[in-house]
Length: 137
Image (cartoon, helix red, strand yellow):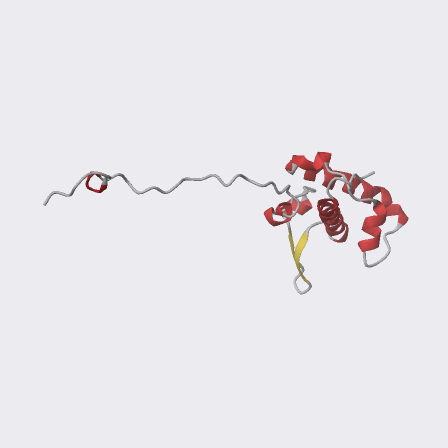
């Protein structure tokens, strides 16, 4: 059972019908995607739908999207030509690796307010402009 997404969520987003014979595979992929995601963004381990519903929804959508991408194209075909039978594969997808882009991860990372600390710009001290010093004629 997935923490963020369930089989019913994946089935609801799929444009067709996922056969019941693929339910175990889909649930295993949900678990794998969630485990990889929690490994990349450790703050997700304590996330619940009550603590941050908007972030939980974004994570759920990302998990469902990644599982459907694996379901639709499990071998990782990136190019296919029918003429002389040319096929190109994505090495990461074909190897079974689950990967996320920086853009995907940035949508689910925890946003924390940072203190507005920085470098104060100060003009350098000049002896001729010091208070109480009269310029030399």
